[in-house]
Length: 233
View 1 (cartoon, rainbow, N blue to C red):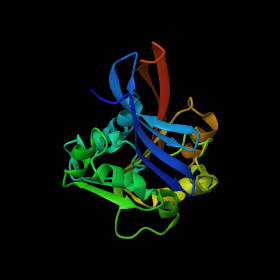
View 2 (view 1 turned 30 degrees about the horizontal axis):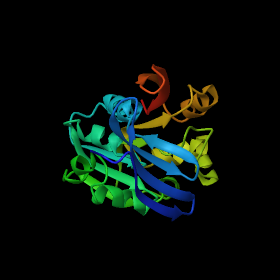
View 3 (view 1 turned 120 degrees about the vertical axis):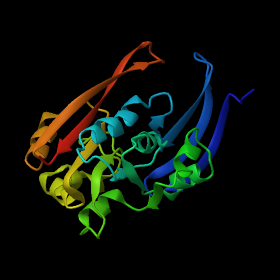
């Protein structure tokens, strides 16, 4: 029988103490993996629908028939990256995380889908700052899709240094890293934000805010996230 609660890892980081824990959810009788940064809950394996839809909805907007190169900003529990790998058109998935601890969790196989992610030869895990990378001039790499799940929303960032990405200039800098018909998709914990949609529309040819509903097993109700998908055409 599983222990009712187990802290799998705890590490101090520049943004606060980062912890990975596994607990048994007593109302469901299942193991739940959770990540906390300081006193904030960042993610839970109970709620992965919207993270997976970030990849599914984003890649559905890519018209290229094959050999897709995908960049995922934010590794987390790995569900966005694994959902991207499920698309047979995908050639490479590069996942960037600013916290080496999170990458190490997956390389050590601590999470339920770590092996699916790390055993796939199309996967590359990269320790870097996604937001700093978007500010830099791109190298030879360009992507068919950039999928971002780091901050709570365009208005609520984990770190103030992230804020510039959600401006018109920040998104124009991001576009330099996309192929000509590439897309940008963004997860948000908030409802659709009209101000952000207006800024994104100044950069991209089309922007859609998808409201993703999912069963909340803890409240016996429905919860919602938003997935923005921005296309250049």
